[in-house]
Image (cartoon, rainbow, N blue to C red; front, side, top):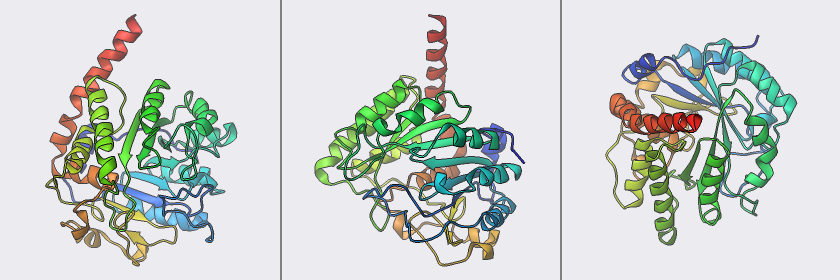
Length: 335
């Protein structure tokens, strides 16, 4: 029942997937419930029940049949689902690379062992501050017990923080401490308005831009910044007042399945279409420029769109940082 762990499909195969007409990535909402209520987040609803394990298995079957290679378990808080270990194992049994987004506050040794044995490949820990606030409790101070567990785990873990008014005073320290702990770390501008656009007031724009520039500089030095050069450059252009040329592939190369089983092209662009009615031809219709993409700040949509537009260029842009990182690691081991 347990799946073997693999972080990535072979890179040539992954590169080829950027050129074909099948979806690459699916986000599967395993619950709408959450143990937190961050004020900038509209993804939680504690009034609805968890999807059943049987329903989730059917959705995973369909995701796999469409040709997806990577599935991200999302919420709400995925660790709240009573069958989350079985969900991971089932997706792994379908040959999928499985990741999960979590605030990690519910993680304990027993649960970690369960998702490790199930074969979870990657974990994104949402971390916005050093100390909790009224806006968000996703703070390193509260997450340290879980992060100490994850430092010795085979699960590939990275930290991801949201840049907004409430986090600006501490989010730079989240980046520094995350890297110091040995976790690849990234900071993203918030995208919490109805159109998924950047919600960065003029007074905060310069500070946000400085944080993007800092991540690019740290990547150039070989530090483990998780965000890719292409996406960070996209953010930088947007914050400088430019509208980059790109065509959104949400709904085509990447899509989401809601907790109630609906097809969502992305986490903001939502439909009432049941996912079980979706076929490849339906996905192809979403391969077009969308009115909502002007000002879009949805990181996963931007990432997959830039990759699909030019897979070789996207990958090539990461090579210098990876080489410097490898050289830095070798130097540390030799000293």
